[in-house]
Amino acid sequence: MPPLLSMRGIVKSFPGVRALRGVDLDLDGGEVLALVGENGAGKSTLIKVLAGAQPPDAGSIHLHGQAVRFTRPLESRQAGIAVIYQEFNLVPSLTAIENIFLGQEPAHAGFVRRSKEQQRANELFTRLGVAVDPEAPCRELTVAQQQLVEIARALAFDARIVVMDEPSATLTPQEVERLFSIIRDLRTRGIGIIYVSHRLEEIFAIADRVLVLRDGEAVAWRPIGEVTREELIRLMVGRRLEEEFPKRQVPIGPPLLVVRGLRCGPKVRDVSFVIRRGEVVGLTGLVGAGRTETARLIFGADCKEAGIVELDGRTVDIRSPRDAIRAGIALLTEDRKAQGLVLAQSVRDNFALPNLERFSFLGFVRRRAERQALARHIEGLRIRLASPEQPVGHLSGGNQQKVVLAKWLERHCEVLLFDEPTRGIDVGAKVEIYRLINDLAAAGKAILLISSELPEVLGMSDRILVMHEGRLTGELTDVSRATQEDILRLAVG
Image (tube, rainbow, N blue to C red; front, side):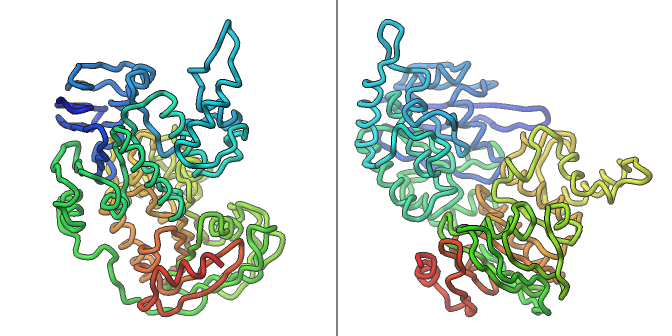
């Protein structure tokens, strides 16, 4: 029997970039295939070719042994292929039902059969074993519920192949386990699943086989039971990583950032803490605990009801991000695409935005100084791009994150608030960011590291603060002896 899906010799190039170099991929029914690789390895491009969003320059696609060619996403969907992107393709103002059947509404005599939609939606959610209000607008649903709507929509189209791109990026551990349960159920029904993730522990938990891409080429196929974590990392990055969390010995200095009684409704309730020079303080908790809201209040992105922020012993009045930047505080936002970058603008423009004062003289931008500064960061951070004039939205997620880092590094801020700095980033790029954090700490900066990945918090922090429902519920000072169970115990209140 031919495989459910076969892609042969897929080639795709963009101006200045060879994204795919003759990639082969096979997927059987009832199989979970993990697709892994560094940012920029070609994973997203391969998915877009399969989804009909990008035509290949060369190569072929076969479904059940029959050649197919997709020129638009609708053709791929009609062939039974559903892609669930990291950024969901839902219409926020429409209900769950309306999103599920959008474009395939059951109709009679020109009228949508709402009762039929209701019945079918209930059947789909029952099949998934979840409770979602089908009449709720999608903007009112949690991230996990929106993901379930995406999966229900795939099943409504009778998809035989489901592609999940970083499906667990914003889920709690409990929600991830629920997702895995659904994937296992889909597998028993003969549906083939391509699972894209940078979280290697998930790959070993759910996948049957793994395909490794590096620099646009398929470098390894392995049954998951025949590869170790260390070997998988080496295949992805092309070299051996000695330490996933690089060690550092940095002297801790005097207090630099002091937060007292920070409050904003039920989201942040009387939060106080201190970060000293050269110190990395981890801030963690379950999704919705108030971590991001705390960082936004410090940065002036949201208005606080009460609280004092001190820098180097003096109280600062921060009412806007402009005030925070001028005071020497930088925020690397959780959502780099929506809040950290202007995707349609070039890499150079994004880098320059918070630094125009540094590159301007008498109202004119000194382009040469701007280009030279950007070039230093491109080399130092190893940003992979065709040109500084390339739209930043065309870069991979990891390289976009490095552009955000570059613009803040150029500001020479003393306090850095990193909110999920490695979300959606491959293991090699993660290590580079960890080393950068270590270098910043060695330079005497104060760093708040907000992360949902507990190994990251444990591996990078000098102290760990844990939040639950807007409050700090505990502090772990002996990080070398702390465990994930210790953090979760505090995170659940």
